[in-house]
Length: 106
Image 1 (cartoon, rainbow, N blue to C red):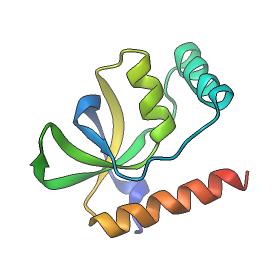
Image 2: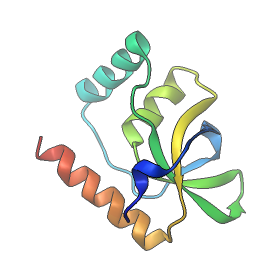
Image 3: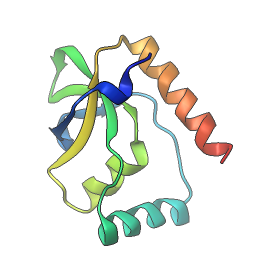
Image 4: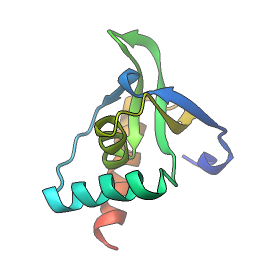
């Protein structure tokens, strides 16, 4: 799982990203993310894993950044900056879990 910071940032169509490990947020927290992105823009790219084969319209699995992805979709963004990693689904789920635990501890 090392080397994420070395991945180049790509602009990925938002409709091509599948959320494989959805988490829920309170309305206030979600609204705060939307308002922040609307006022200052997206400051941190999401992380996605490129699928070996497309699944319907999906070409990528979301690894980290569900709140940001949902916010930019709501705001009408067609693309989102993302770091693209090559990981299997188990690694993606583990990375997502680690991010969620870290976020809850801050």
